[in-house]
Length: 118
Image (cartoon, rainbow, N blue to C red; front, side):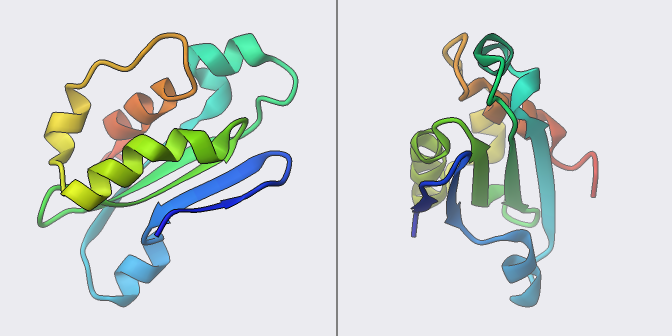
């Protein structure tokens, strides 16, 4: 279920949080990226604070949750909602082409980070 809180910055989320997934007994990996590190975040300048966090079911290799905090936080979640609903493999998401410069490019960075931190 996608959800958005229209604050400043916006908070958009879809699927399970890391905590909820672990409570269900799932083995998860997480990936994070800061919005200012993306090209669009850099261009946006003031008000570009934020992050994206992805939650992967490590056993199945699919995304089960995503949260985006930042400018247009709710808009960025569309692609992640489709990926979660359709159970698209994370490896396939890593090889997608993400438009440049967009806030969506932070998704690419978070995908690259999956598994490094956990």
